[in-house]
Image 1 (cartoon, helix red, strand yellow):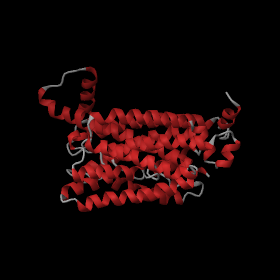
Image 2: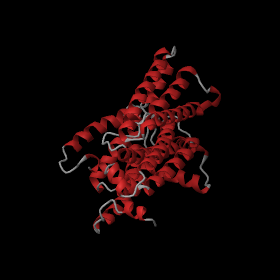
Image 3: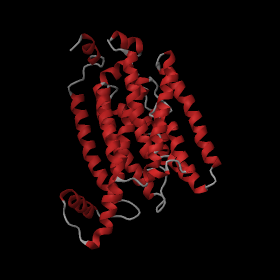
Length: 361
């Protein structure tokens, strides 16, 4: 191990003997809660399925068991419709929480979230174009997510090219992302405004607020692989995130190549955000709120925060999706409406916590 690597690993104060055990215990509790949330998320909906039947259908699907013909309808609801949706909700919640933790450290801004770089607004242009003009219609059900991901990549490249001219500093990243986000949003709104089809415009607006409607098994593996790989990378760079959160000068004295580290973290978090927005739309407040709540619980060390935040985010978004299906049944509410309704009181609560400093600084 090099001297610089040793210095990075010591950026956080040595943990007390009790804190690691409490963090591990919290993770174990969240894993149990996540498993229960998945079962509840599959069972609950406009058409409820008894919990016993849900477990039986899942066991039959996993082991190749036989389901009676009379139960084909409930089985299809459980396996083909709700389970992929619930699993994708867990993946999106985990990914947004992990990205939120990293972004807040990279730009050293307590108000940063996965969408501060303008990636989601870029994705909204592609998704809106599909909904209003029929772009990529030959791709069928994959048209919207494909267009959203491609336009998110374009947005990522533009942000990097513009912000990187004078060095990829936190201020330049935030300013560039915010400016381009407004530009992309204007294009998306123009497409909605000029759409001759009211239903297409409504579908575009629904997606812009986040939705998991129409999810199939095909959407889960890619998103899950990206989130797992990206989160693993961020966990491996937890020491660097600790250093960056202290400021560039301090991070440099601790042996961190700040410019190279920030570029790598920008690429990883932007790619994760693009994939997540492509499959679920722009679900607000998850990547902004969950990191702060987790820091309030386990402290500011990114090793602990990145261990807990993805699990907490997964559980949270599953229940948000359940609420979206139930509160206005048989219609669905956009996920962003519910996350905003929960996020605003949450931040009012955090503002009243005298012992909490936003971002751990």
